Image (tube, rainbow, N blue to C red; front, side, top):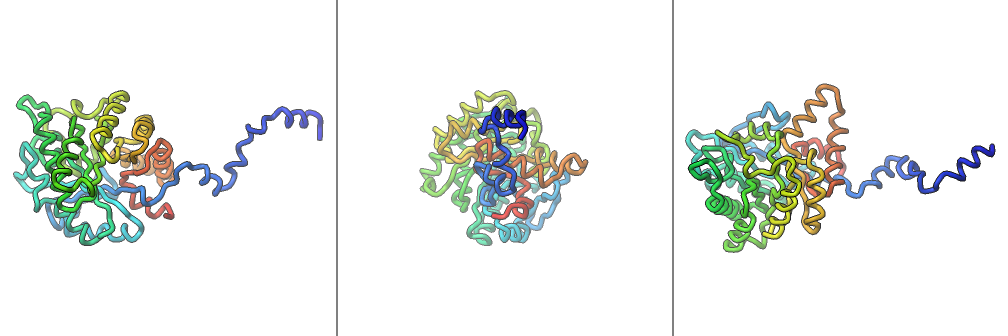
Length: 340
């Protein structure tokens, strides 16, 4: 050995040689603090009030709005591949069914309650989460009950949202997930579940850090939930509001939330990390929203990325940031791409 080569080896710090730790595919898997598993995935489904509905959503590739008569056949192959959980969004389409207080949200004959009962009967082991919000059901398209000036009436809103959540739990939902971002609704929902004797078997998964983002367009196409006027910036968090997000997750944890959702996901990984530290004893859920899903599809169609690789990379990023659960439209693909 030449003297110069000997000196280089002597001067190299032993701890600086890292490649031996990830030079093999299995080693690269071992480097993951958390590995992606099928039981982490939650699939969003849109159930309309038209029983035989099958309507593809143009802005959401491979996703359709379905009626209760079609949802079982749609989900069966996914359940057979290992699907463990869904989150239901109801879509009322009947003329005149929307009103200022969202009466259709918990209509016993409406899409959500009928969907819960249908899925509980068809798939007894499927974990059913219900999104709780009023925007799909109100004539004005906002997430709560409004004052005459168009602002949110907090007291009436949280009372109505809590009533809807309790009725979903009575119908058989395992979990209620309030997405409205109106102050105090977790406490009101928890009180309602306690009074109904359902708190011991209903998980409250709070959209505690939901931002007023530019990534919800395809969802609003699917759920028909765009506001008729104004926007939701007065109750959803501002993009730069990291401190507000930290306060919101702390508040919702203190009010009795059993789990925390961060939405959107890709652009808010710092919030996900904050939530995992503040609520270290609660599961954190990343919501990979419709716009993020559509963006990855668009990039793959342009040949900018390989779809499978970028989906796995992005979802692993959520786990790295602290998420334990992921709501994702890529669930059908991921059930094929991951082994267990």
